[in-house]
Image (cartoon, rainbow, N blue to C red; front, side, top):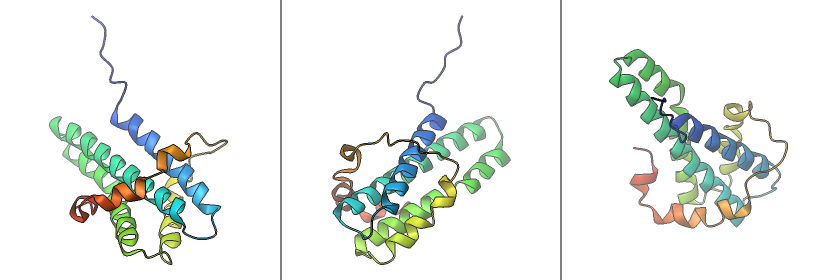
Length: 145
């Protein structure tokens, strides 16, 4: 019997989201001000950070099921910045705090510095409308409670 492999693992999704955020950070770094497209890009970062956080939680629960409590908690601690930064960016978008958004976005760079971007793989269709979608969600859902 062959081994069953999960082609859509939490780690694979996490890496895809990390790549998406890295691309958005690079694109946002080229903007001089926060316009509608920048808001969409920041909202996509928020969605990606939430997805990373969900994947971390899924992996941690898997470790807990195997009684690796310490490893699960260490994983959560190592990635707790995702939930915190997603909540901060969401709040800033809701408050239309365009002066603080660039600094908050820049604070993410160290978490993605290991990702090399030789060419963009994500197109505008990916982030277009993300801001509107984020604003339609209840704030309690997007705060990362």
